Length: 302
Image (cartoon, rainbow, N blue to C red; front, side, top):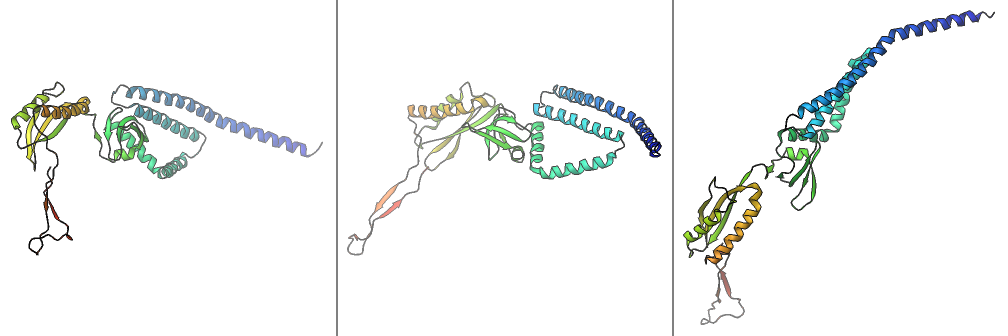
């Protein structure tokens, strides 16, 4: 018999014993890792579902926020589960956490602008300076809000154009919301001639202020704003519902012109007086034909 045969058998037995010991040593770790994965996956799903349902009880929480927070909670639990599973096999989790922190920092620096838009989007969704369907003016962009996303907000302009504005540009700019308040004030200034009857003009404006769309509280006001260069300027101030603002203002302007015309009240327009003065020469009052006449223009009137 070959002398090397017992050595091979002994080596095989030693390898088998080592493998058996390794299997026994890591069997409990493997079983524990599987249990942790299963339980962690179930907990992550439950956390996502119940957190979404809990936020749904609050009417003012936006759908985008609910989905974002519930998904973020699920992935956070899964990351913790993964780190716990690796620790079952003796892996140093401290180094993994350090690597994840460094990777997060690098990703954050690379996506600084994107993360800024996300942070601004979350603030817009939480504080709600505007909602879907409201008309806003943010300086460089104005329109009706279509959707508020985590990265950008979609709007439709007054003339029907589509605009996508980064959330950071909306969050860092004063925003005028024309739809948030239920009522709006309108000031209409109209000038009449100095020869016209002011009480008559005031009575016409008062009749227009009795329109059913004009709110009684606060009451409408008619007043003289100033004595202009060529007109007495009257002011009509009233409050109305925001939905009636544009149509009512247009109606008021049209009716003021029509009723003033019917009452014989004029609305002055800019005028200018021009006087023709021929140039005087020193030869007995005869004009010099080579010199043009002097034209003096009066002050321009409002």
